[in-house]
Image 1: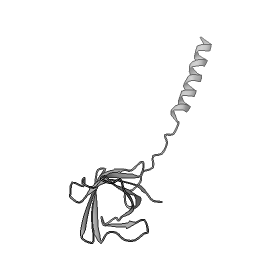
Image 2 (image 1 turned 180 degrees about the vertical axis):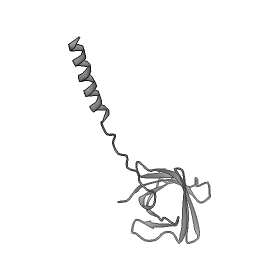
Image 3 (image 1 turned 60 degrees about the vertical axis):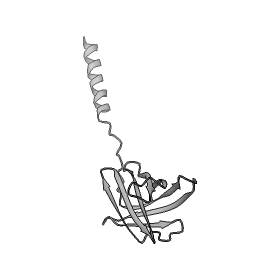
Image 4 (image 1 turned 90 degrees about the horizontal axis):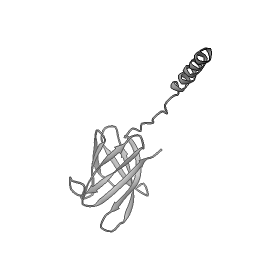
Length: 129
């Protein structure tokens, strides 16, 4: 009986230490800031490097691989994890729709010349540090 009591007390002590184990902290990435990645044109497979700078005021600046501005004006909106981007490049309008994964720091989706954002291809970006 004494052995059983000692065993139960030891088990209780060991299990209490295991219950105190801390969970890993999850890093949540904010959507505002600089995002870098590529677009892929479905018809040809051509990829183009782009950078989005999503400002807190919901405006967007788009630059190419050389850092040259691509957009003359634009905006973005995030509802839940659904991201919508619209910007103008000289005489062309671009629409991007995608998802925001805050734990992975990733954006991806489709883009095009219409609000549906599907007639050009796909895009994917990660948060720049």
